Image 1: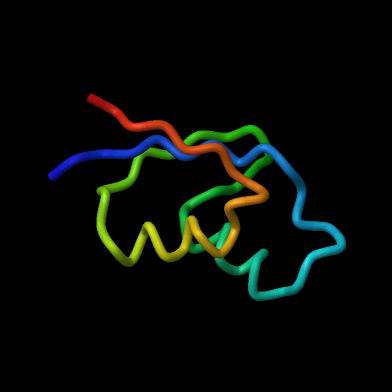
Image 2: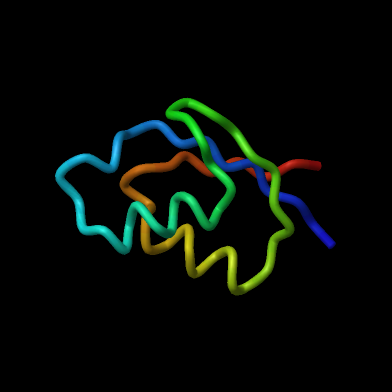
Length: 60
């Protein structure tokens, strides 16, 4: 399965609670942290919800 690298670049302060919960569910602990996740439809949906807070890269 393909992997994607997600980097959290913008704070969740001032955004809805469910967006902060999505950031935590993606595995982030700190701002500017990067995580590598499987490229699945569930992860893509989570990224879509917080697309204004993260940067996405494909890992080859």
